[in-house]
Image 1 (tube, rainbow, N blue to C red):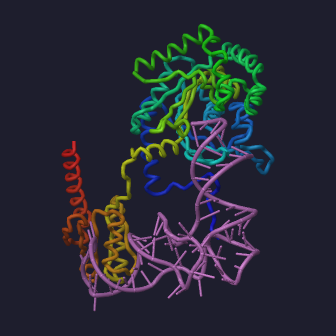
Image 2 (image 1 turned 30 degrees about the vertical axis):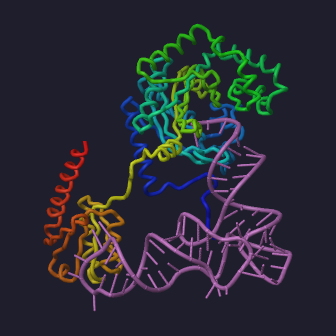
Image 3 (image 1 turned 120 degrees about the horizontal axis):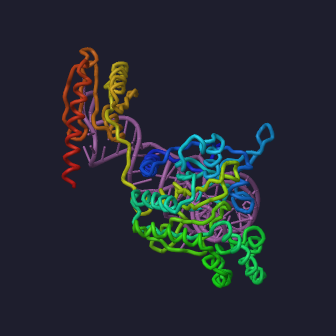
Length: 437
RNA sequence: GCGAAUGUGGUGAAGAGGCUAACACAACCGGCUGUGAACCGGUCAUUCGUGGGUUCGAGCCCCAUCAUUCGCCCCA
């Protein structure tokens, strides 16, 4: 009986894993350039963490979490996102007291949401994100967006659509919320069931509604911009000015509200639109939060951050053919002519590995012909071939699989011979690379 | 939660009720018994997701079920 992977999960193997390594390397290094340090937090958290941060009214908490009771009847949840965990770890370890503020954290790893899988959406998916926690300052908000934008550019994306909006500070946000609730209450009987529910639990989310009919009503709704107090407006203007200074293109989208309850002031999303101008959803998104740290027991610290969906990034890079051909490349494949030399081949392979060469050794009694095929499949630079003669005299043959040049040498010279051959290859490759430029 | 499409060897797949389930790639063996990408020959699905039904006869039609994929909602 064949066992399938759990619905909504997927295996990432071989070439694809190499591609993810590359993507993560770029994300990591850009974050480090901006002064961020890696945080690794547990997959499991007490469920309360997410109901208090992401919010009881969010879809994530209401229906998408992997929540269960552990053996001591504590309700635990596999993280649906990282921000809450990062903030929790800062509070738990009192890092706000021992580290310089703001704290700059980046993370990468799996998150879990029980949703219907589709293109670019999995139940277990990897997020890469950053959080900058300490104080409210438009420069930080701008830095975070530039950081995210830079990552996408370094990954090879050309046309990124950055949507931004402001929800305003506490005061503005609640004034607007009140206004919009009054407005939609008048039209709600004509709107979809989801909106009826949203009106009760989080009226802002109605702005996000994709239903055509509702959109007409949404378009006539009061605008956030007219409810911003002076402070919030200045703040947002400063952020957009800083983006302009860096020549980061963006669109202000007043319907952008985000489904996580902790955001205030700045919210943003990175999109990539394909030729049909369709998006598989945001590549990444984030925003500013003012109450989250205090809500989780820390001080009155503001934060700002974003997360990318690694699978989405990968998927679009693949579609747009922006992923270089990554394949296994072995240094040396060791083959033996008959079974009698397996010990000798084994010994040589191990010596090569001790010297840091990526080595694969054949232990089957396949023909040399098929061993050469295998070596080619592993994309090896060299084949080491040993037979009865070589084992007896403690020598070996080494053949360059590309040029077909072969030489023999003494076993005691293994390292010097191999080192020299690879030096030559390195020089050649460098020359080729330079010629290409 | 709602809607749609698709399930045939290791892979890509053909197959519109009738002999033994095409073809290609991969794999393995041999031609070449100590040297690879070419070439030639051979081997490789008693079975079409699973269960039931219709029929003289089912991969093909019907029902159920499972799985996958895509879309909506929402999200990264």
